[in-house]
Image 1 (cartoon, rainbow, N blue to C red):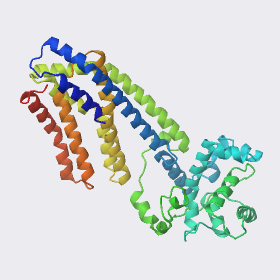
Image 2: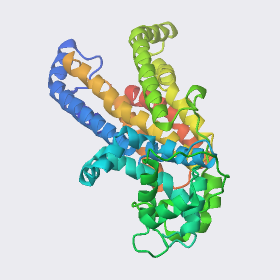
Image 3: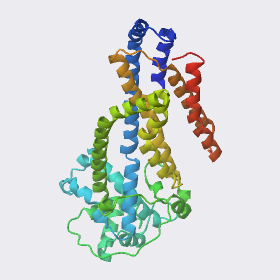
Image 4: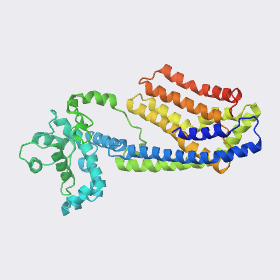
Length: 414
């Protein structure tokens, strides 16, 4: 995402005479020569930014995305705790008219419906832990008694005769066992039957098997069946959920979280539009009164203000000290860096092009690229990052200020 910097910096080196102070006529000529490069850089930045958004959307919206996985985990936990029944977890199917589709026998229409098939995949993630608990040898089969116990685990009660009838219908080869696929089809049929009147709660159970092996993505091997306890203890992490959303179903939670996020983003944009211009004037005035270049004032104060949200969010995630939280923390910072290199630089280049400005930030651009290269190489060639390594990287911040000063005042680059 540093391509935009190289485009405008290359044009500046080829067009700028680097004479101080530059004459007005020279600045105008330089601005005119650099304008096409600024436009190209703007286009590249927008393409990179759009591609980054596409990648983020793909990670979040995919069938194996973290949002879907989180919903499935919460649903399974609620069923284990006796707070949710199977029919309650499968309420989404009713909203998508699954019952009418199945009654009409139009199975092809069901299979061709992308939204419906996505719901099937999500329900497979929910049902896999319950099936995996009893499939201890990993052969993808359970018998009738194990089938009956799963009914208790999902907080649904029905007579033994009715359960036997369902099992027999699912056991198409009369082997006395049903596979995971038959199990899912059976339970979906049960949950969609409006004639089932179900009551009662079930005993809580501890699940040991890894459910991922029953899904199509091959995320785990059958040999991992006995390792679930350790994984649960190491990977368990409480999600921070506002109290007013904690008791809602997962789909409603996601809807309200998105609405709340968009409203806060809109409010943030409104505040930025109001205070950004006065803030620039304030930083310039501080520099004048202290007889220090406004650049150095803004280089210290502006990032603390504009990037405070990323700093706080990254710190809160990292303080949990789990692999998942650390990944989220670093992803937050990476996203902020890519935003600066694409969206923010694109706005800057747009101003250069439309306002016919000369690019006079060679020193700053060189330092930005240099620091990003150092951090990038340190990540590529180091798998473990210690506190000393973090302090060394943090020292690059004041070093950047020193480098800008040296390049401007001793090397003569504006």
